[in-house]
Length: 344
Image 1 (cartoon, rainbow, N blue to C red):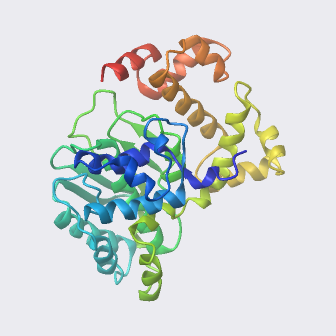
Image 2 (image 1 turned 90 degrees about the vertical axis):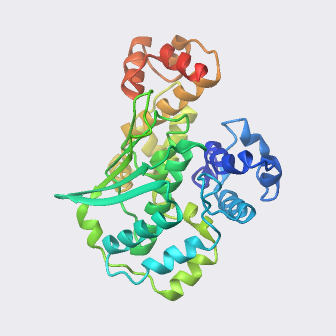
């Protein structure tokens, strides 16, 4: 089991963070070297990046571009914007009031983004839409905006905020398994032919908006000392068990260990493991399926491995079972998804 698996990120997040800098003519490899990240992550999906280095890259790219949104949008979010955002929401009485202030602030600094927070009975929805199509790495633009608002919300109330589900306005990316660690295990994705009019919608319990803020000026000063990159490290360790289980399942493929077997490897009872995973808004079955989905998308998109061979490598007894699972993930057959990926 990799010792630092819970403290790494998929290289796709690094590429997304560098997309704006690359479009502006900066040398991506040079930017990575300055924070000691292996440039191989630019081309190899298996080269995961230490979380601390990713946080350093966040701050470095923002400072280099003088844009805390990494050049993703036509109007830059100048360095210092994040601090003003935090100071503007800190005096709010509740999380709902803080988010309302954050939405107004972001409308000023990122006019191409539309953000709303609304209650609907016992549920609330955070919606992120494109006023103008996101031209630079659309997937990462949505990923970053959701992480910005969700991570900040968690910090303000001093606890993890469970997202019941998130509807992402694009097909599942190859690094989709990391979404379990960062957002929720309950992610849904748009059809392969998506539209800029489709928003991202995060669903959560409405009563969370009534939580009081638990941070003061002293806490904010400590928080800001790590720069906006500190957001990338927040509220991930509370999902460490998800990562450990995922690593054990990946090592065992094509075998599929049972919950009891994995629990024994972790020196836990099956009941305790199930309870720990439930506390992290996941389950043994969800982790197993997310892992197989992640590997299937990566292998189909990057190699010529036959579909039947891939099905066997992922522990499916019959190719037909893999076919049904893949259609459920993407709405397409494995072969059609592969053709569409390469055509794009």
